[in-house]
Length: 428
Image 1 (cartoon, rainbow, N blue to C red):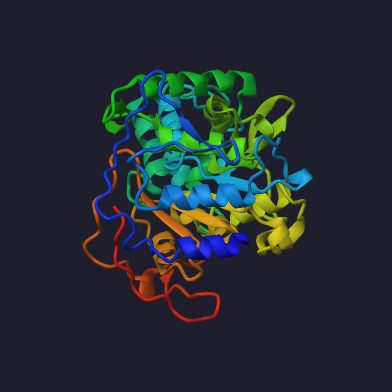
Image 2: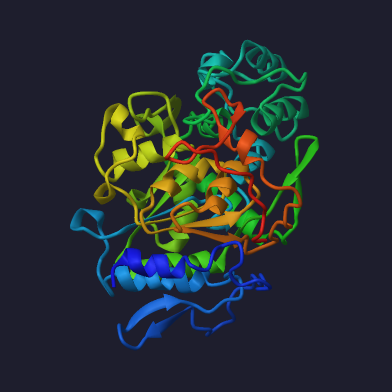
């Protein structure tokens, strides 16, 4: 039976009705618990039984593994292995490691003022209002030196407002002039604000933030500046098992994230990802010191965000250069499997040729696309920790289902041009 036949058979039970009533336990397996099962016929690992998997989602993934995998192979795309791509934040882990690192840097006074004293050099999209606000709030710092944001709450609060809200504390826009399908300026800015540190020192900061957020009880909030922010992160045990099971079946497994690449490398190492398997927001180096200059993709200023994720995968994994990196490639140059949770993931997930796993965080464009499920390859699962409640109102796909390059909402269209109807939330 071909992979298309297997997947079509499994897709007959739609994501809207599969496994109604499944629970969403998220506890780590106890010591000695088997994290994967063995298929006697193939003698290869399948996903561990876990109530966090909704409906027949686990069975569908196992069927894909049986059809596409090669038990025990050393998976490499260069040798023809199927590719599996994972977003990181809120996909492999609960909560956001970019946030966790930025908050730690602010709390510990580790963000540096721009070397030349000009805040516009920290982002090409920072507005004059934001440049002025940051310059005024953080004026006490010597250019190029760490800002005392552990004690200077005014400077800390202005940085947080620009990063978390995309606005100054005076409610003026902080960023402008970017393509919203290829760039998210606050995500990029979190990476750009790491400038001035050698990567070895930054790795130590990221490790400290990681330990702090893993040690903190679930639900912890931390004081950052004068406000409260999320202060904990957890690896999803189900996603750890999925990553390991894909590898055991010969898949080439990689991360594609909109967090700073050096930070993602620190967190991903615990799941066995080597640096060459991690793609994140990249900045140029001055020797071994990070700068605020972004490494472009497809010949333009783009980061791994919506279409920018496709671009980065096409460039790094398949060697597609220039503007063509933003275009969907033929199936041999596409991933077989993808996993994500947000609108930023919709393009690279759509490119996956076998299955596309979505953790439901009520993100409109992604959920409209997944629930429409026009080719039967979408797999929707609740978050494994603290899943979202079912959204009462339908997703407004006919009017707000697509993020335009300008950032405005528009109707979501299928590849054939028809408009995706509004979709009811059914997996939560």
